Every structure is written in structure tokens, then in C-alpha cells.
Length: 338
Image (cartoon, rainbow, N blue to C red; front, side):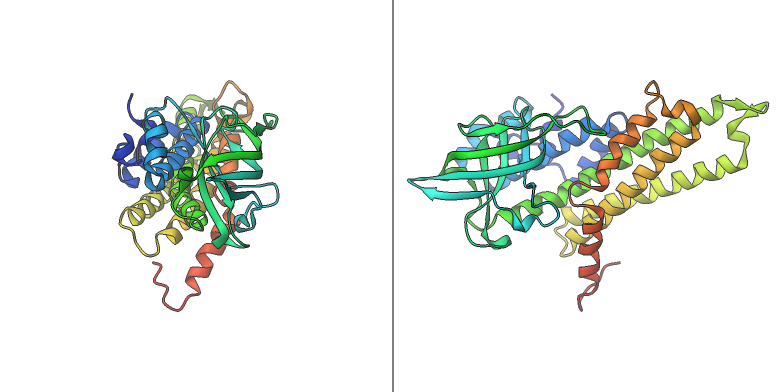
């Protein structure tokens, strides 16, 4: 009802078409309470935006308003068992046959798989490399689509993660997003926003953890005085807050660059994702430490925040890949990253 499922999706499919900066404000507040569920909603937003931006009229009229309203949900399907960081080497194939595409292959680590309605799928329609990849909208219940077991994960347990197999799955030609060969570019455009989203989830979780730690330092007494009176713990809290504020500002700068279609927006998104997800996890982990043994108990939110934010350093491109993206840009002759 509040439009959270289509925050930055185009208006033509019922989205709010908010700037990415505005969306970060909403996602951060949500993630301060539940980063796992918020992250699931951000992935849905990313896939819905891709469908609404590059989808045909047939695709948009079939799914658009159902997705932006939350009546239906979408998954983003890029990663494969043998193609994680090297996404351009994916092997799932879509062959044009008899007025439609026939898809064969498999995807891995797909958030929401088995519980969503639309799969935004990247598959190979041409030769090797990124230029041979195209994007499709695939009904999640299409004949030939099957799902693996629900993965047992360290965190993110409010959303299912499964493998997906495609066995002669047929989709109409008008389910192609954009043109043939544009799929990798479309996927990376989606991930620019996805990296901001997951960075924002880390910032929100860290804010929730910082708030909990601050309150605990006031409430908990040892050696006859509150923990908040110990300078060592004051310094730790100050460092946590400083890292958090720096991460928040970097995320918002990257979102502003993306809104302005800045030439180096992708680099800033990678920088923000790397910094904010590292900082967010560290703040949550430090907050757990400040709680002592209580932080390790499930009755307190810290152990969940630590588990849920750890994966942010891996998905939407590992933080090692984020460093590769940034370094590659910095080493270009005309780089003006500042």
C-alpha cells in the first residue's frame, strides 16, 4: 500500500519512479529493523525496474502493476554454479525456435526462488563473452522450470534461496528485455542500483545495531557504574558512529551520481558497496561485542544482524570484485574519481 515494491520502477507500470537517493532513505529505515526482508524487497525492486525499463508492452501489461503493487514478486537470475564473479561466462542458453525462445541451463543462489512469480533471467543467445547475453522475463511457473531445495543459510532466513533449472522452457519473443546481446549491460545497470540497495541495507542494519549498543551501554552496570562511563567503550562507540556516518554519506553520494547519470556512476556504486557493506558488518559485529554474552543470544537482535549483514560483502558482486572495478577505473588515463 505504501509503494515499497515499486519505489523506483517507472510510472508506466505503476511505480513511484523515485530517485535512487530517495529510495535509499526508505530502505535504510526498513533495514534498521530487518535487513534480510528489506534486502529481499530491494532485489524485487531491482528486477521490477529492469522489467519496467526494458520490457515490451506485453511484458509490462502482464506483470507490471502486479509487481509494483506487491501482488506478485520477481527474482533476479544471473549467477550460475560456474559463473559467479565471472558472470559474463554464464552458460544458460536461449535458442530462437519457432517464434519463441527455448531456454536450457541452470541458475544458483537465487533469492526468492520458488516463492516469486517472475524471473528476470540472463541467458546466452549468441557467442561467448558479455556480448552474447540477453535478458528475458520468464514466468516462474513455466513448464520446464524447476527448483532445488531451500538452502540452509547462515543468515537471510526471511527469504528462500534455491537453484533453478530450465529444461526446454519456452517463452515468446516479446519476453525479451531490450534487444538481443544487451542482456549483460541490462544486468549491470540493474546491479548499479542493486549495489546501492545492499549498501543501504548495511547502513540501516548498522544504525539499528549502534542504537542497541548505545542503549545497552547506558543500561548495563559493571564495577558499580554504567558501561557508558568507561572511556575504552566510549571510543569504540565513537568509531562505530564515525564509520557508519561515512558509509551513509558515500552511499548517498553514489545514489546521487546514479540519479544524475554521471559517467563514473558505476565506479561510485562499487566504492559505496565495498565500503558500506564492510563498515556495516563491522559495526554490527562490534555492537555484539559490546553486549558481551547477551549479544550472542537469539533474544537480542545483534546475532541476527551480524548473520544477515555478512552476506552483503559477497552478493551483488563480491567486495573483491568491487575493488577490481574501482582500480580499473582509477588506472584509466582520463579517470577523475574524487
